[in-house]
Amino acid sequence: MSLEKMGQAAREAAYQLATVSTAQKNRALAAIADELEARSAQILAANEKDIAAGREAGLTEAMLDRLLLNPARLAGIVADVRKVITLDDPVGAEIDSRVLENGLRLSRRRVPIGVIGVIYEARPNVTIDIASLCLKTGNASILRGGRETFHSNLELVRVIQHALAASGLPEAAVQYIDNPDRALVAELLRLDRYVDMIIPRGGAGLHKMCKENSSIPVIIGGFGISHIFVDESADLARSLAVIENAKVQRPSACNALDTLLVHEKVAATLLPQLVALMNERKVTLVGAPNAMALLAGSDNLCDAGPEDFDTEWLGLTLGVKVVADVNEALAHMREHNAGHSDAILTNSLANAERFVNGAGSAAVYVNASTRFTDGGQFGLGAEVAVSTQMLHARGPMGLTELTSYKWVGQADYLSRA
Image 1 (cartoon, one colour):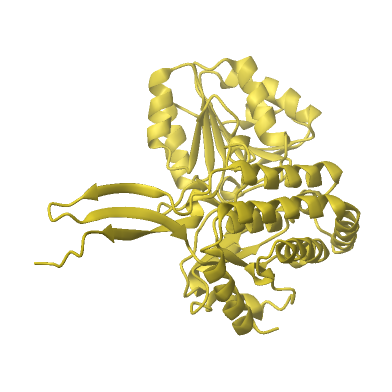
Image 2 (cartoon, rainbow, N blue to C red):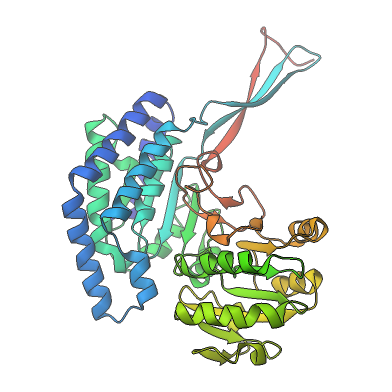
């Protein structure tokens, strides 16, 4: 496999996509959705191979859940592709414009970024999400999925490339590095002659490796400890329902709840109720010293170790700590890798505003589950990543976040004085 040739092909495909009409891009997306449905049996059979290999390799149930495809999940992927068709194409849109005193009309016009390299783990739906969003925005993509989803990704990319060819678009608009050799990841990170942006999707180790080794700009995201703070004014019964949703609705997701912070004035009431609920859900509780007595009824209870509040659990484990007020909650979050999705449950407008303004997270919620941080839930159709950095894009990255802009000047044969 020659990444140099892949890069050349991707760059050429990006040149072609930059001038393709919205209608033609939408036809290609519709063809991808139709092909996913037509080849669903083959896709699910390929995924079964990955699941079997994962079990043999000793992957955790949380990891197996992340890579699992079933008819319902595949139908959801198809629906996301069709949702992207309905969204406005940002390419060519004017952001703003003004006329200077010399008569020059200046505007900024959205353009594709070019070639996007995406390195990701586990979730095969990422393959389709990236391909559909990049295609809609006129970007070519080079994908490198994890070895645990090897068969699933190969089948999905075959579907994509067949649909592209049938729609008159270059197959090289979406390419997949199908060699598991990790040296190819390092090579991709240095392919700055052709690749314009790297998006890693995975754990902290993957992000660190990309940031330290890439000669290409890297979008950092997808990792962060998700917190919920229960304020003293919160409706506790309704809070429990939100906590349950955030923790167990899909515990392997990056926006699932990792740490629960509880105001000291309501801890004695809330935490025993939480224990009963988490026992039903088979959730292991990891308690800070000031919470252990109130968590004593837990079937699965552990003392929090030095690193536990810095751990993204991705499974049925929940850290619990009692805090004095919203300021202590925010201080804990700053110390322990908040940056992804965090929430306050409160009936106090002042505390809600204090939390929203003080949290450095990409997505902050008042009286809502952290599980909403998702491109589909945000109405973006899908997402290529959840960015937790401060520059360019934050939160779920949809169509607009996959564009840049160019300045366009228009005049009547104007020369500079």
